[in-house]
Image 1 (tube, rainbow, N blue to C red):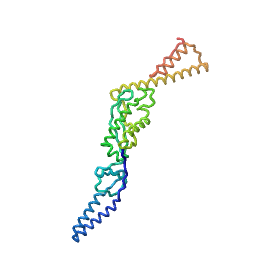
Image 2: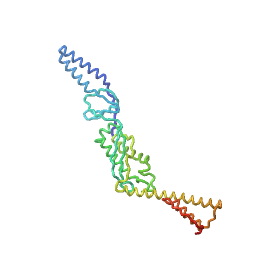
Image 3: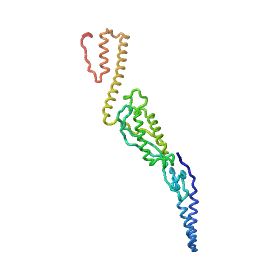
Image 4: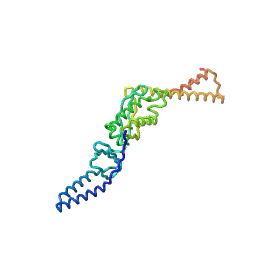
Length: 284
């Protein structure tokens, strides 16, 4: 496989000086009625002007001579080249590409919507020009393919696969690194350098989004209740220990059970409690 060959062109300002000299030669030839020199100077003028080429910063010119690749000009400025060379201009600037939201299945088979933001630029002008038919379309298609492969390699979150070490919704750095590596491998044959690749949008597909949200809410409620019960048990244990140490009141096992039950109801309830004042004895 061929790669880019850097070409060092001639100084363009010397060609401009030659063109000016040709114009002066034409003027004098006309003045002294020398038609042959007029033709010669005119051919030189056309030859010099036709070969002038301007290369702007972060741009390149790929040169072909009768279909044969001769090299690429990466330098900036005014140059002169063989007028018979065909020129193909390429931009070396970094470009952004945001893919459309595509519906794919994650590792567990759940439909999700995902898109990617890609920053890329041309690294090898020969490959970009001749190894693929249309390098911009190639970038779009291969990026879409890489996103689909990535989404099918990892679960959306830990709710689906508790043993998964990497998920799409939590391990952003690992996912983005894997995505960047996958896209870079696919675009290498087109001479494209991947500057950055990251997930731009990620969500469950609409048909299951509501069910997944309810499941996540239920899991959050269970986890919160678990924390509340742990805290309540600790508070009850501390209260009983403090009452026993200070000998404020002596409770038998039955009254301890009743006190624990009441405290747990008060501490774990999700609504305000309504106190009941007992005007009798403790055992009434």
